[in-house]
Image (cartoon, rainbow, N blue to C red; front, top):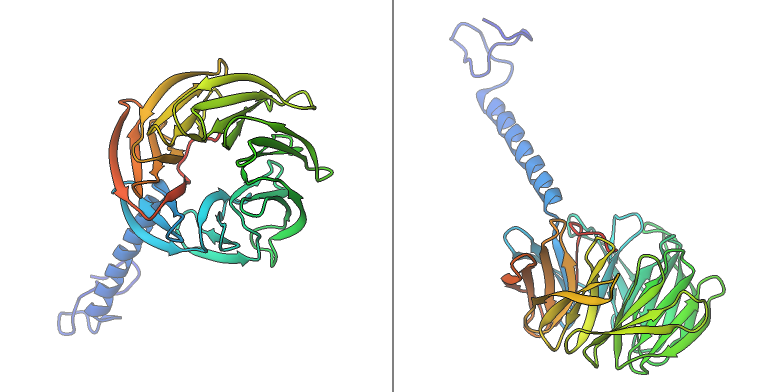
Length: 357
């Protein structure tokens, strides 16, 4: 009996009534295992897509810890330039861009496979980074050199992805950046002069500079572009500034949080935002319609940057003093687990995240 394609059944040997088979048994078994392994590889790739890696920047180790979110183990370490602090996804969503401040470079990493794509050098002290929503501008805070730097974005695969446009003096110690939804204004906190700076992107000139509270760090612009929240690391407050008037901002409210208020992460519902309190070892949840704290979570060992997963309840935070990544359940308000990463972990990111508004 023959198969439908006219060949003898696989494995039928000479002398068994069918003559010599078109390929030996070993070859058939090899092809069978090749198919099985191919299916396993496809399944593995699909699993990787379902649970993309978590990236943690180890500022004092000059590398990235790649964490499997299911097993919560470090599966890889990626070398970078000196002092990687912050990271951001490219406009085409194909590259995660890591800013290496003391390395004067950017490391491009595939957000799905954790493979290094390229390194761009000659970028002056990139501490914090942002793309404008229209994806035309790439902006960095040059923390130790007292500049905000404007670049034209040429694309991830361009020979020179960034075209320098202007370095704008920003004394002293520009820390964090935010850009309005219309891509018209860049806001920067000036950590060591206790000020806010606003830059007009059309003219590349300073619009205004205004005093704020002690040691401003991260800033968060509300989705309507009206209010700018400023985390005061030298205090235990978030200041709320009305920036909608065009002129100097107006202080609206001071929100009590806890000591060492530092970094923001939107909840994803356009109504709430989280802020880490680095000295108090807590995270506060703020309602941006009432500007009040509505919840609080424990976060050990100097909580810094945060990532909220798409399930809406899993919060990841870098525990900077302990060199760990901490997972918090926001429903039970408890620390679920931790994993040791590198020295002074700072920025964190994964593709599996809630919207940043």
